[in-house]
Image (cartoon, rainbow, N blue to C red; front, side, top):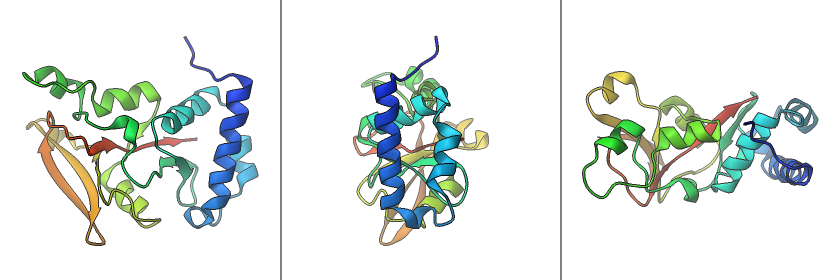
Length: 180
């Protein structure tokens, strides 16, 4: 079953994305809204994923001069917090299991977690996660040992940390991206 927006939802989303695009031109100085609109307006899967990013508090916007939407909410999206890293970590947790995990949520939304490099690039366009933190895509070599990576911004610096993949905190979520 394909996930689709109604015509009204589609138009409302496109208006919101356009407004955000023009309110934050510094995030994408060489991009043109009409080019972006043409690329996404009839792409039901992309529009649905963008609406999910918006619904969960991500405030997606184009970042850099490439065709990539990224969650640009000031803090880790509120509708995606208190989750562990992936399904394996969730299933292996014995007590106090969170309701979901970042990798499954991202897949269901049709987005990918940011990598450490992408997270650092995002920080060049503003100050994100100064009170929260966000899981980032973790290399298999770390995940196989039970760990996972997350990032935040403190003291005007971007930091990367590790934790058990099964850990979760009310202030940790994830930021997604979608190429279009």
